[in-house]
Image 1 (cartoon, one colour):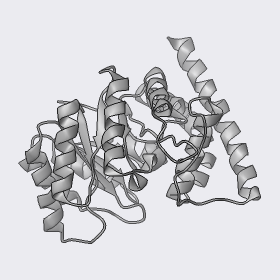
Image 2: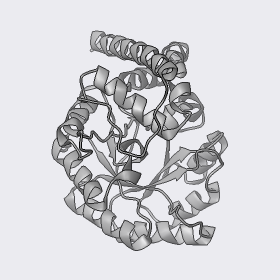
Image 3: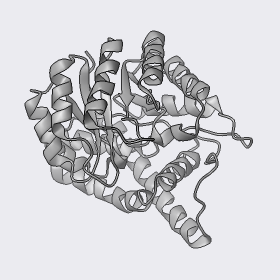
Amino acid sequence: MLRLNGITPVMATCFREDESIDDEGLRRQVDFAIDAGAAAICGPGFGAEFYKLSDAERYHFVDVLLEQAEKRIPVIAATSCGSTHSTIEFSRYAEKVGADCLMVTPPRTAAVPAAEIVAFYSRICDSVRIPVMLQDADFTGAGLPARVLIDLANKHPNFLFAKLEVTLPGAKCLEVVEQTKGQVQVVYGLGGIAMFDGLAHGATAMMPGAAALEVYVRTYELYTQGKKDQAKAVFHRLIPYLSFALQHLEVAIHIEKRVLQARGILPNARMRHPSIYLDSIYQTQMEELIASVVELAVECRESQAALA
């Protein structure tokens, strides 16, 4: 079964002027991610503005990821829907067309009891053979209890991953890894800002956006080689960018697209409406951060190339 060790970026959605999807921008991201050392790729998640895409567009997004990846790298299909029925339908489709793993967030439009959340994931795990990742996305809270993840692992051998996007996730990460005896690997989200917390508590993968992928790859490799001080020195240069980006989901997606555009990977940084638009002072701050991140990413790429 699939194991994830390294950086597994979420792909962004590239939009044309009429807000239709530009497949070529997605294809270039896939090639870039593979070339930059990604362990896997994922989509369409929050970073792809999945909440603004139609069902048909989300299915198509998965098709393009798989076509472009061509089995060079594992593909994680984000198949969350508002109902168990729709999520199973999308998940079975993703499995049929060749996805290596599913990433699923709990239903969030209407709050339901914890028992219903467990039943939701149990039915998804029973409906497919490929691995399932629970995306515990509670950006300002503690998310689901660790016991929920542990119980799912005990019941389902294909429940293999938990992506934590919660406050202070370290204790939960360690508990899940230890109590499942490593069956469940933990992936850290939220732009990877808590990367060192994750690595210290047993996480094996990070899931940021793709824009500064080389920085995460370089940091991860230095850390796993025991060069922790060097890893921190590299990653801490990314913190001002992440601190700005993580003020709001739409800001995070937009600035990631701006970096991808600056690097020639995307033709534009267009967001699908509705979104957040910042004033000229914020725009100046963004431009400075984008320039610093592009410089850092290129530097990390050159460092990796020199070691190859």
